[in-house]
Image 1: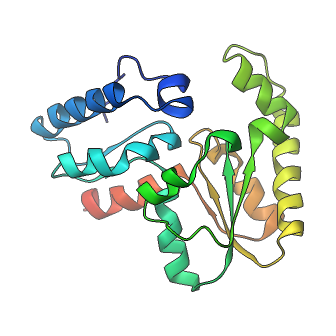
Image 2: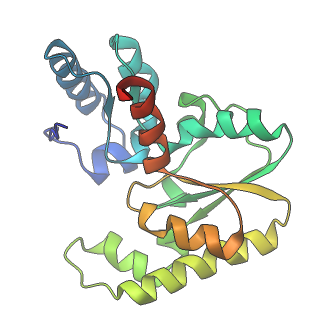
Length: 198
């Protein structure tokens, strides 16, 4: 596994105001990795979904930017129309364009909840990456928000985490809700198994 840092990639240039210059740097780095023999590439922020089409089109190897790519798969498995919860880091910044870029054009049945807007402990993390977090409280708040969302949408068939920071809460949410959780890890393991399984 290789981890590469893209100069200029940050919350402002990816989440708040997607920057085509940063996207081109991602493409250039992805092409370099492809030439080295890398077999697939992903990113560390689900909001990179906004760049999915451009980056994947530039490559010959799989590129998967965001857990949002799993929504069409979920819909195909369960049939339309079904309710799906999308849990994101920042609801205010998650636009229809992110969904369109990852293959979802019909927004019906998608119910979006933002942790920055609804979870006090998560907001601390968003305001200051060096903030000390009460992890037990964060988990409690996180699960409570998801449970409330399921109560608001009792026909929900699946939960999708947009954010790559959320998989540590997947198992506890699966147990609390009885619903499948699709996250960055489930997506990565799926792609990895198609390429690297011996």
